[in-house]
Length: 259
Image (cartoon, rainbow, N blue to C red):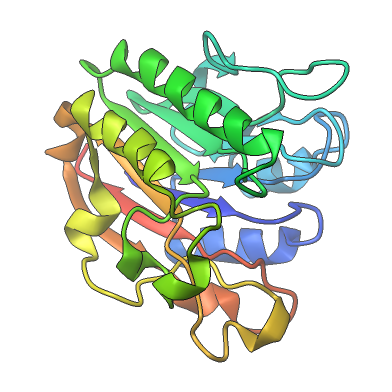
């Protein structure tokens, strides 16, 4: 099974690129984040025509996650037990979606950004990650893939200049400890296992020529349970998707699983 994860930064804006990627890379399951569309307005017909079943979780033009699969889509779960809410009035945002595809429990996850260290959104981010970890610990015995935009760079080498990020979100000890807790719960971050090294970025901001300068971040990750980790045969970061007309600011991560 070929599983991919991609923060598409608006599925309607990037629809042609996503469909081309699915066909070119022969992807069986794609987990998308930041779809920026309600379920009612999701462009599902285009994916159905391409041979995929569509499961989406979107409330409005913000956030949003989806899974499209050509190998089945069962046991849909929108949100996870204990997922924190945000805003006034408080809403459980569309940031987590689970679908079982060919026996693999795929979670498409869009972790809150955090914004700034003194912003309540940062506390929300840490609370959200802790709640997800507590839930994920209960799933670890099965074949589970927690994939998506985690909005945390686990190592200093996952950003182009650690000094630039000092005192900012995405690189704090608290955020990195929150990710390490998933390893303690029995998961492995397989993108690093298969694609080690520096400058293996998955995100480049649109501003200040970040992509041209290769000033990126590695924040799109895949945590797999032990039984699934043993079945991962390859991982690739598709850097070319950041090129050309109208790209997302993220690129896909492709995970091959022997099932």
